[in-house]
Length: 372
Image 1 (cartoon, helix red, strand yellow):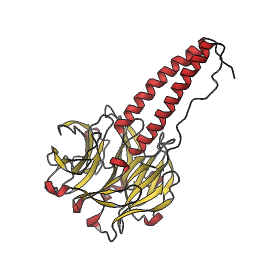
Image 2 (cartoon, helix red, strand yellow):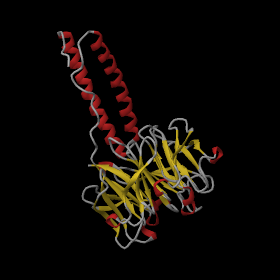
Image 3 (cartoon, one colour):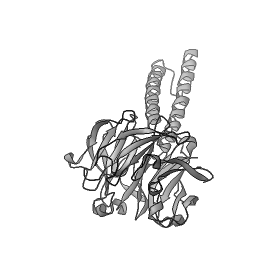
Image 4 (cartoon, one colour):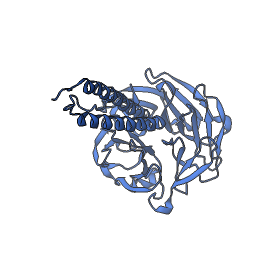
């Protein structure tokens, strides 16, 4: 390996080393923010990485042009992010199970919210919130439960009954550090309510929407800071909604383009590439068409089938999550087949990550990766 040939080269090398350290820190932060599903922070990380890479390209080119020799160190790579995989169990207990985020090995039952659970006490959604704690939504009790991500201690956080929800079934944690609860409704009411991320206080109805708008599928934040809602009750489309005004900004994808099939979409996740990944076959009657579709995260343009129907045995993808660094693979929670893993780049099936029955997992629901 070459050595700097002058003080100018030495100074330039120090600048490169500084930027390399900055790049490594940003890459590791990106891995952590992806695991937390903090998509606004993810976008900031990506912008920062792009800027630092541009600076480094210029410095490296100058180093070479000055005849300073070969750089004596490699480019940094992000370290593996240590996580736990948390999965809601829709079987005989209303619980959240904890698995190793790298191996899929069962660790323990993080919390049994209703030990003698039934259909009335099932957890419909699971998100990370303030202090890296876990928040579980239980529609029929109209409660948002907060679970300590380390100890598993839990308690009531927000009571959605104060606005007479029909079925509060989806929840998203926003970049403003507040919770947004969507009411899928049973025709009675369809809306999105806002709740304080610090104390669970009701902050108002953000989007009082019309029938057939909110309906059953995921409610998530995108990298642009807007809400995205998957609707499968009769209109089968994905809406982009302003969390500030509650206005529907546009139909992001719909059946008009024939990519979203009947009784889809349901589960959704934005990938590390910024694209939106959508699970179809969300309802039990749609098991024959279960797949994952891919859409451009900016334009909403359809980019094709990412995970083909039945790949790896998937029948009902109720949850999607991208895993930690370095692979950022896609993980699907399938009510019949456990937790399935797919290649982040190709969508190819890579194996069963958590088999049915592991730790008492009888019917997996929502899933998320929690940094530790």
